[in-house]
Length: 143
Image 1 (tube, rainbow, N blue to C red):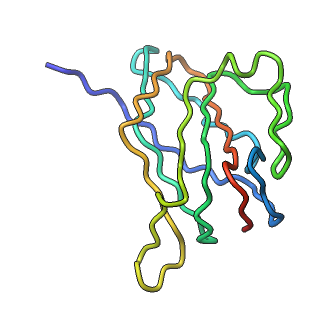
Image 2 (image 1 turned 180 degrees about the horizontal axis):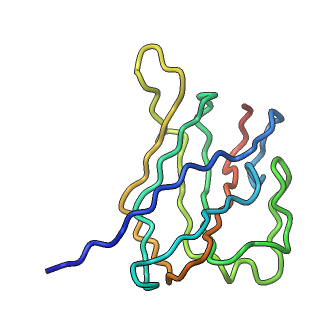
């Protein structure tokens, strides 16, 4: 019999500016998922992510997850993302979101866009720790 672990849901709202983003820019800075832990301190898995875009811009993005704070680079919203020494070594997974992946709901008079990415299977060794993410622009867009 398979054991199903606990689920962890987090609602994070990155602080983003209104200036135009270009490919390679950080979007919203470092995101922190506080006190994430696997069952019994063991391994846990990021299964899915859901994003809502109130401006309906349908941006092409990368979301990168880290097991430790990516602290020594440039991760400021709207600036070119520049990794610090050792930060890439803490990367545990990267998710690509294409402009075509976004859906406006309701379809006729949408007030926002949404995208859901499932079956990610990004494994993380647990413990009472934080998990971090960076959002990168994959192409130019404006909010």
